[in-house]
Every structure is written in C-alpha cells, then in structure tokens.
Image 1 (cartoon, rainbow, N blue to C red):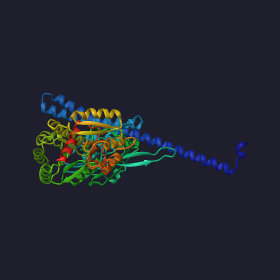
Image 2: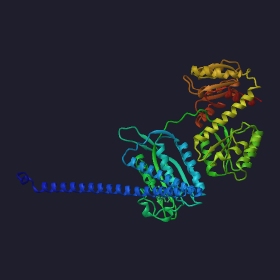
Image 3: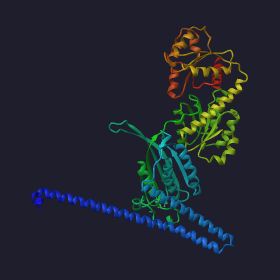
Image 4: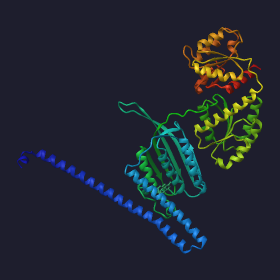
Length: 558
Ligand code: ADP
C-alpha cells in the first residue's frame, strides 16, 4: 500500500495498459486454443463419418454375400463393391495419416537429387490413362526448364502434382480439357553477410474446363474434409483431404498455391515451389555437335521446342513440316552425300503417318541411320509396328532435353561405329601420318594406343608451340592430319592452329586440323572454326572417331 502511494498517475495508467494487453493476449490464446480444439473435434467427427460410410458398405455387402453364398453373380457383385469401399477406406486412412504427420511436425522433407524428367513421365503414365478413360484431351507441356536435376523432396512434389491433376481429371466431365504446364524461373537471393543463393522455382499450372467451384467454396478449399456440396460431387470418389494436404506440404516446402475457379467454368491451379539445382550428371556419350539433324513435325510448338534444344546442344536443326518433304530432302541429301546425323519424326505430320515416313527413310538411308520418334504415344502399344517400320528409338513427350540428347548421342554413336567397322575392313590408313597434340602424358599414351589400331602413323607433341615447331620442321605434305587439344600450357590449341595457318608454305592452308575438346558447345565450335580448324571432335578420341575423320579427309582429297 505504501508502495502504491508512491506511484504517480502516469505510472498507474501504464500498468493498467500493460494489464489490458496481457488480457487481450490471454483471450486471443484462449480463442486460438478453442478454435484448434473445435477444428480437431470437427476433424475427428468428419473423419469418423467418412470412415463409417465405407465401413458400412463393407459390413453390409459382406452380410449380403454370406446370405447368398451360392449365387455366384450376387457374391461377385458384393465383392466388387467391397473392393471399391476398401480402396476408399485405405485412401482415407492414408490421407488422415498424412495430415496428422504434417500437423504434428513429424513429416520430414527429404533433400535428395531427382530428375524432373523421370518424375513428370511417371505422373503422365499414371494420369493420362485416367483422362483417356473419360475421353478428355490431356496436354502436358514443358515450358522453359533450366535445371532438369533438382534437389528437394520428389515424393511430396509428386503427391502435390498427382492430387491437383487427379482432381482436374475427376472434376471435369467426359470429353473435357485438361492442360498442364511445367516451367521454371530463377530467383537470386542475397542475405547480409552470406553468399548469394540461386533457387530454381518450379512453376506448375493445371487448368481444366470442368465443373469448377463457387467463390464461397474457394475460401475453404484447403480446409480438411471440405468438398463442394452438390449431388454431382457425391458421386465422385474423394476424401476432401487432398487439397488440405497439398496446402500443408507447400507451406512446409516454402511454396505457394493460388486457385481461380468459376462454377461451371473450370478451374486453374498455380503452384510454385523452390528447389536447389543438383550438379549436372555427366553424359556417357557426347552429342554429335555441329552436325545436321532433320526434324519432320507439323505441330509448330513442338518443332520449335526441338529446334531450341538442338541449337542449345550445338547441332544444326533443319525443320520440315511434312513427311513427303522430309523424304525428298533426304533423297537429295543422300545423293549429294550430306546426310544429317539423324531424323527426328514428330507425331503430327500433315500428309503421311510417322511410321510410313520411317519405312521410306529406312529404305533409302540404310539400316544404321537413326530415326527417332518424338511423340506422346504410348510406346508399348506401337513398339512392334514402329520397330518394323524402321524407327530406331522413341523419345516420349512431354519432351525433356536430357531424353532427346541421350537418344541422339547413343544412336549417332552406334551408327558411326558400325559405319566405321564396315569401312575399317577395306581402307588401309597406313599411308597417313598424324600429329597428336596433347599435354597430358597419360591421355597422350591412351590416345596413341587407341588410334594406332587404325594403322595410321602417329607422332606426338606436348603443347601448341611444340606442334607448330614439328610442323615447321617437317617436309611439305609430311603430316595428313593434326589432332589438336585446346587447353594446353605454353601455347593453346587455337593459337597453335592460327600460327600453323600463317606459316609461309603450301600445306599450311590445306593441312587438316581437328580440335579435340571435352565438351563440344556452340561456342567451342565457333572458336575452333575462327582459329582455322576444319573439324571438331569430342574427347576421348577413339578408333571409330578417327575412321570417320580420315574418311572425311579422304573424300575432301578426291
Ligand atoms: P477430394 O478427395 O474430395 O477430391 P480434395 O481436398 O482434393 O478432396 O478437394 C476438395 C474439393 O475441392 C473437392 O471435393 C472438390 O469439390 C473441389 N475441387 C478440387 N479440385 C477441383 C477441380 N479441379 N474442379 C472442381 N472442383 C475441385
């Protein structure tokens, strides 16, 4: 009391204000706890109700089956209904477990490297048949993808995508339209005192022209057990937990979701999730950079995507719209000895079927020529007919760069190999002399070992300067070919090639100089051409590469 007397009015007021604040905080906390309790009870009662419905069906149908045990059709009908109800029950239990794992914080997100291409193909295989059953048009498109290999949680990403696309299929009537687009954008974030970090955001868009939802329902779409309340929905299997799980997962993953919809006019879901980029996987074979690839496809969007990918890989795409044009083009190319390294056949050609084109091309280009089908088709269904028609490989759509490149590099490598196997039987390269310029001793030794299998005579130099000297000191026409590494100490391959070309002797201009690099990117090819090199090939060079190059060299002499 004594103390209270010493408190002046302003202090007293401050204490009252403080108490008021504490009071408000306490009532907020109470309200939140009550709200959480209410949510939990309503969750429990919805769950019990949802579990009871299929349980009733299972119990009811079991007793009917038992009563009519001798009537096979009746028992069969009961068993089928039991099966449907148990699947529903199983889904419900799984969803509830997922929900409780997420809510209690027991769900851990994994951090693993995964391939977006593999995941999207798995999803397509799962959902396309469901859409086909309802005769829906199902388009899954790939926009700009910077990183195909990501680090994150693939299982939960898959769950999000399957839930959203699965709903689009479910809530869109027969003959409807479902359009999915997957692309990426980068985000550079800088935190004070830390290195800047680059995130790859996966943008996933799913649109349908199905039954849609009212604005009122949209506000509670992410609440557990909420389903649009009408008779159409009642007939569609569902637990009302999918969207809630999606939202919770996205919150944990740092992602976002927006939904736009109109009753009777379809829905549009847009999801963005951040990932880190995984280190690139080293390809076993390299692309035939700098070579021509013919594309026959009348669907412009698809053709443009292929053209962009091929250009990124350093190849020279030629695009034709029709099958007949492609056959004519190849006939002329064959005649003029400028065949492309492969033909990519699209799924839509405005005049002939892809398989008919393949049959013609196989006949004219021989058994080794790579013909690759790039399509949305279910390969298992057409594989027999397609291989008989001469298709060498299939690349599924949605089209990912890695898949296209893997097929191209494998087939062109095989084709080159069998061509050189045949050529190797009758060409004697013993008369040719080659200068191999490579700074790494071990690489040099391996290359000499491999290249000598062709019978060609090999001399070596350990850097660009030594190569220039060796050439300068040799009699005119002594060397037929120079294989030049690019990155070397003392003098690099570009400078050495330039120096050789400038030497005042006749063969300085005509000697074949072949650049050897680990990667064959467009930029490398441009630089080697600018330095006056004739050819470009990727390391490691082997006997097949050499056969190919020697043959080219020979055909230039003729
Ligand atoms: P369900 O298991 O019922 O599909 P979800 O949580 O996945 O549960 O979705 C909740 C509800 O949202 C659905 O029951 C449906 O009423 C509505 N919904 C979700 N996606 C769509 C869509 N693409 N079109 C129309 N309604 C949708």
